[in-house]
Amino acid sequence: MQEEITKHSNKIYKAVKKSEHTLGEKIKEIIIEIFIIVFAVTLSISLHSWSEHKHQQEEVAAFLANLKNNLKDDIESIDREVKEYQKTNDSYEKILALTTFQLDSIYKSKSKVNFPIHSHGQTLNVGNYEGFKSSGKIGYIEDEKLKQKILNYYQIFVPAVNEVDKVYNDFLFKCFDKTIENADKPEEKLYSDPKYKKTIEYLVTIGKNNIRVYNENTKPLAVELIKEIEKELAK
Image (cartoon, rainbow, N blue to C red; front, side, top):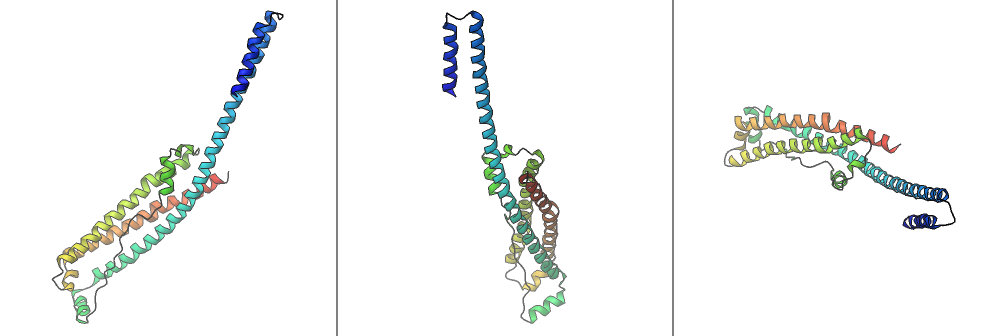
């Protein structure tokens, strides 16, 4: 491009210097060469912009394809975590329903009360999103609605899941602490202790809330995002 501009600039210079041409002819030649230069520069910029835009959209397509797979994994993780919450909640509710007589019978028969342990942590995949965002390429996504849904999912719903899991784990550890504090007492006394039972009740309540967060907030948006991404990739 630089060579073309230089070539046509030299032609303009030569046209000005031609003594055999009239002023009108010189002006005409100069205008033609200027037009050629402007056209060449404009075309070059347009081609460069088109090429850059094409490359950006190829990166977006690759990102969305990977994100779709991430979201499918997220849905599987959500279903798995919900099942664990339901499973442990059922077990805790059975413990809460045990009467003093039932507890005495269990321990007289040398049996034990099964207290299930399942802590919940980071289950959703954020690596692909974080990498694309940190590189400053989120703005390449031209569909504003899709972009906002992606941002909402990873900046609001994923952190919300992590937060409710943390609250649950905190109460689970309170149960452990209470167990350790009463390690020198018969275990049946622990399970009939009002404070301990209240802690388990809260644990069940939080578990039910977390199931709601997973099933009614995070999972539906993940499902919706997959559909939106498929539409975008099909364009």
